[in-house]
Image 1 (tube, rainbow, N blue to C red):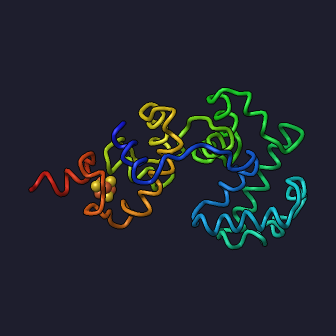
Image 2: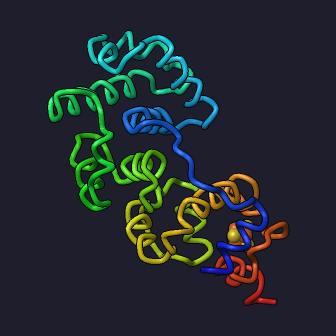
Image 3: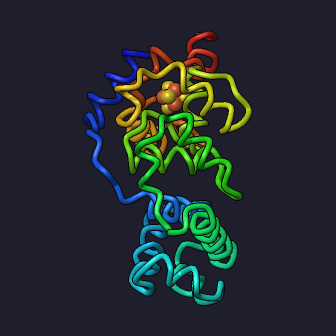
Length: 217
Ligand code: SF4
């Protein structure tokens, strides 16, 4: 594990944590990122916060009004509904639309709080916790799930199971950089359709490579 982490750091650079955005913004941004590219979801997020000045304004708006500025991210109607529902739930629980108080919770409590919200799954919760607060938790998206299984770090069928397993195998101090670098490796080399193993620097540590190329040679 240590060598894989350091190889990824060597090739893609060590990433140092910085806050991406406040937690409600991160929650909304993660909802917008579902089933689309970073570029499209970032544009949708920028349009949304440009159209509405506060979270309360979004809460008061119709779903159709929320869907309009987020069209570029796809599934606009579904995402508008989810965003409104999440904001409504935070307001109902806290009396205001703010999640900064999670900084005072321990990781488990903060995670439990978020996943107890309707429509918030483990990956969304992990994104809020790591990107807004630097809690050492690994959000497992499709790239992380695919690579972790190909390399052999885990043997899991679902992203949720991978995320659970990751809690015990990645040293806490490496999680942020490892997460971002693994995604970069998934986009550039270990692609979903066909891994470019001949261009990969992780062949010596990879179960997929061993099974498909080395074992038979
Ligand atoms: S060796 Fe192939 S399967 Fe393994 S991480 Fe590299 S690209 Fe992915």
